[in-house]
Image (cartoon, rainbow, N blue to C red):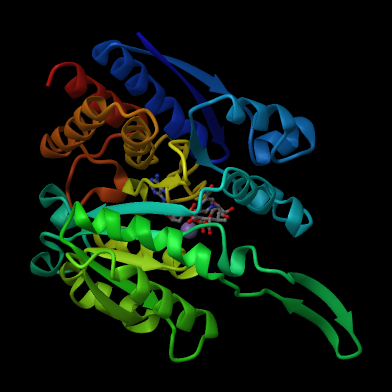
Length: 361
Ligand code: NAD
Ligand code: IPM
Ligand code: MN
């Protein structure tokens, strides 16, 4: 029997709630599809700061290093916003995790499910059939570029972030986007700001060169401002959106909302090997944390992506995704995806409904 070790980092806010809802489904998947899962829980983020003084303790990194994948909840929240910026959960835990493990490609699949068309802020005829993948570069750009920091000058404070990309960083994530497009509708759109940014020119030049290896895939270009507008005007025109780090961050939240809720968008952060970090695109949601109403779908769909990409357990991944769809079809809704008059359930009941349909499809 295959045995896999998974690092489980629930983190802060709704993270522990959606994680608690997800683990029984992962365990059921192992049981049903005949593999063994070692789920190793470890502290991260604000919870780790409170317990150990550090957002990413060495013990947690060790657990991650000994695992085939990380299932992540969320980190951050008002409680830790007064800390020095480089000590806060986002910058001291999440970004180092991505960087330490070389997870340069973040895949964010967004589909408007027919069951949820009435939860979209768009007109039904615009939202229907939307199915796109944001491929977000994750370890470069403004998030990591040096120099970075705040210095005092004779005119007051001066804050610096640096947008820098090298050819090799663009090339490897571009290949991920083209490969993904090959298995989809064969259309990559590079989102950039090539009318202003030097780094965008390097993205365009590099993509054009890489595209020669993928002549079966069509390539398009859009400036990011236009892309943000096209996403609400006609999102069905897109297949794979390839973005530098910050543009991908912003556009993926927007795209998630078009299909109902940020609470349904999972993501896979991948590098050269099979190891991956599976992180909901949304955050710790302080406005609803502790109320038992968070949508666990993003976390549960993260578990499915983990099974697919890091463990190669495709059947188990498909079965979880099918159970999720069946739960929507049967009318279960957390408050974030409830349209007028729909009966809503909390995190636990929604996840239980998925588990029931997973066990008895
Ligand atoms: P957020 O994503 O936490 O919340 C934005 C909105 O989306 C809120 O109204 C929230 O209730 C809703 N939402 C998000 N996930 C949901 C879910 N599963 N179910 C229902 N509704 C959901 O963004 P924010 O409020 O800007 O940030 C809050 C904190 O989370 C900040 O500290 C931020 O840095 C952090 N954050 C962490 C991650 C991460 O750990 N991967 C991602 C994004 C934001
Ligand atoms: C995301 C989040 C993170 C990001 C933050 C919390 C650092 O917004 O995963 O989308 O910007 O990458
Ligand atoms: Mn984000």
